[in-house]
Length: 308
Image (cartoon, rainbow, N blue to C red; front, side, top):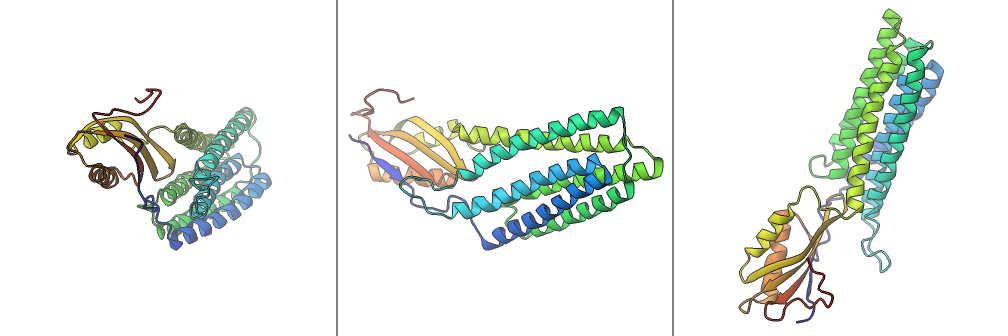
């Protein structure tokens, strides 16, 4: 028997690109980006490394928000003959670059912090305190805006929301450092606060790079158990074997699968195909699947016998 491919024609791919998501992400991006510039200027004016490191964290927020917004916009573009999946991978490529940038930023903060531990400079604590408080308020407003989006079901909005929550810790650290410097003249609080924020940045940067690299390497999605998928397919009536099974991610929430399914003499090609795709969609959230159905008596038609 020749190759038989079954394709799911649903194009939702688990992404519900509602206009409120786009509005929430765009408004949050503009708000965070604007204050990030203010914080960088304030950091240099007050000579506060904690403010500059918090601005670095805000850069990660702005990048996450910008990527999430852009990913939704690009994800709406139709696929072409040269880009059969459209621009959905843009989110992952850009996220990887974003993660690498965060790691570089955190290394520079660590280096500067070490210098300041040895020789703590004068820091304008009141100016630092004012900017830190404003930064905390900006993060609270941004989190509130993002809550109007599809935070529970949309991975982009949820990840952006978590970024902003994390940045709140940076603002709280900068406020604490400013108060310690103002009341106790404890200049070393500034580099301590900056190191704490740098640790947060490098952890989030590492996670982003690790997760995006896994996706770019066509790794199996964490939320899917390959053995469970195979077992479930084998439980379908007349299915005797499943091989050459591959599951990977195109972009956040867009799972893709391909496999060979062997049916016995009693099996009906179209019925098995329909049941398999319904199972993959309902049980595992896989909407885009390519299934090659093979007759047991004929065997796998692959000429190179490379099926696994």
